Image 1 (cartoon, helix red, strand yellow):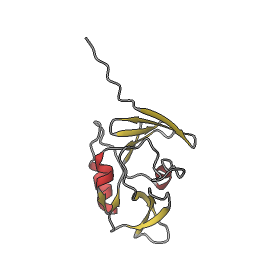
Image 2 (tube, rainbow, N blue to C red):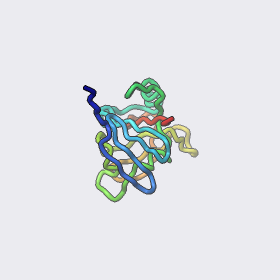
Image 3 (cartoon, rainbow, N blue to C red):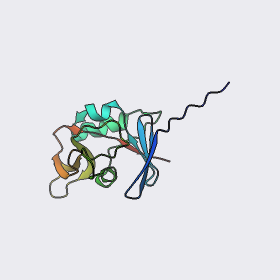
Image 4 (tube, helix red, strand yellow):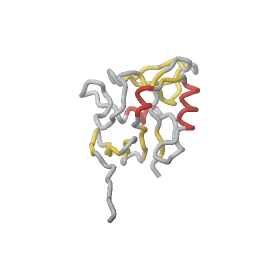
Length: 139
């Protein structure tokens, strides 16, 4: 007897973006990317350099091709119409600033980040520790 277990838990459209929730990840089928959504997302903070290392060495759901998201990618999961502005399909989030790989052009010691408590975009110092949510291409 075969038992079929569905990992699919939800589906939501936000600003034209289609998101699907699975165990440990949320898939953006519009932009063809997969977001990390496990316990480490809310618990782990790191510098810019170590965030890159963390994502590059992350093994999640059998995949190893993770990276720090760009500011444009991270903006796609912001929902400013709710308290703690990350899209409600994400289970693991701290209402704090999350890192991106996008450099602040006026000063290379900073990169852009998003505060998921307020939805604000901020520039953050590369040596300060902030939350990380890795992403990968969904091929």
